[in-house]
Image: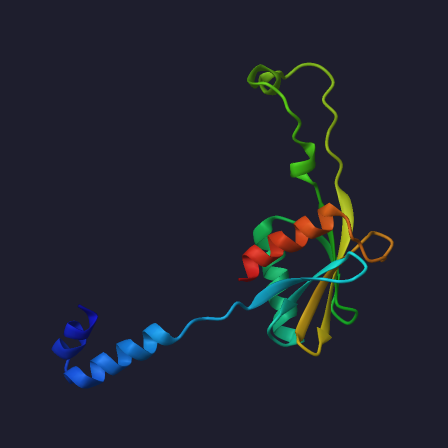
Amino acid sequence: MLARFMVFLGDDQARAQRALATAATQVESPKAHLVEAEDGTSALILDEGYSRGWRRVGLALDRVGFAVEDRDRSRGIYYVRYRDLAGDQEDEGFLSRLKFWGDDKPSEEKQYQIKIEAAAEGTRVTVLSEAGEPDSSAVAKRILSLLLEQLQ
């Protein structure tokens, strides 16, 4: 149908068929992928330079809904607050979730550092604890997977 439309607009039949064939064979490679290190930490590898990676990670943090408290581009760090909603959910019934009285403990937000650095394969994104140590927890992996969804 598209080839017929291209011919209608003035292109010849052979050229329209070639254009559609090349467009069908071009597969877009992923722009980001998750890697696991030997020490248990995870990292996100972006297939682009540091400047573009810094900007895209900042946009992804905004889209996911992280509270970005501060950023330091010279060191490559975003300081964010994250509330682990997946860890807060308990096995409760329908009526328990409707209960508005009683003592409900609010889930606490923790501060994390998202470190972005230039690497040989592109740009590496890692999650650090509040103290600046590499974080290998399940929450850090969840943060990276949320970023991966936005950066694909």
